[in-house]
Length: 357
Image (cartoon, rainbow, N blue to C red; front, side, top):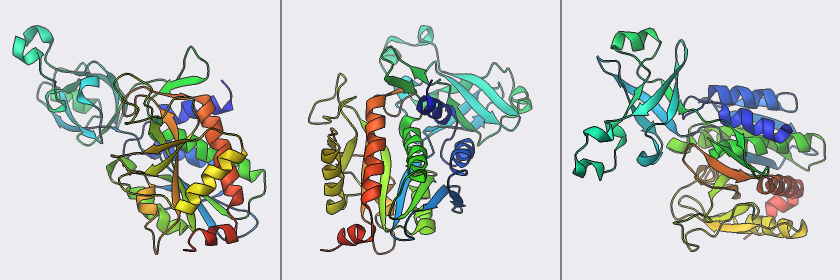
């Protein structure tokens, strides 16, 4: 593995559902501390700061650290663990998946189960099994055994899914690319700018609890007080069966994408055009994308104080909100080059021009 692959492996394999991002935060701190000043908000977001040639403008690059997952909600007398989702998997992909419960005594491995098909009526077999009918089985036979293992109500549960380099060595499969791919990009952007000139103060924000309401982005923006912002995300690939081109024309390996619309934000148009022009200068393919559903950290950052010019850049990803997303290394590398090039352009005059109506 090269350095980027190792970075993606560590970040994606780390557990961190909303509100329980501690292990991811520790990794971000380890990567950022040698090259930036570390700050934080009051709910768990971590912020790396590096001043370039000027204290202003303040440029914020946001990537959320949390992933979708589950939480223990009840332990039955028989030692069965009932759970609820924290944000959202599709119910139909859950059965038979191995998971780990992050208990007070360490990791407890189990599997998601439900009533076996042999005991279902013909009508029941036609129905989708819902999360409320599922459970996590750790091999226990009593509640006491579960409690002795350290499991308690409120413990986070995450899927077991290793980072894997696929047959095409430029494609990677892992859980939590949403949004650990952005965390990796944020780290590598800071590393590049630590070796080069930039006409601004640059901030990397690893935000918490994006999946449950963009919470960390709001508080991190108060710490940074940015003059301009870029939110980093994944984007939904439309190059798989069942997705019409008009729903998503984004292709794996087709270059990074720029969101022109989502449910919570329309980008600053001048910043959007600056990104497009920069991609053209680099001879880089840039895919334009519109989300009819879903939102990003940009949704709250752009409303900070009197308003912050904000844009969203993304890495195309297949199988979003599943145990096994797929990305393409070319999209990642191009996104990194584009982010760095745009940040180098964001001097005081350029940022002021973004809000000159």
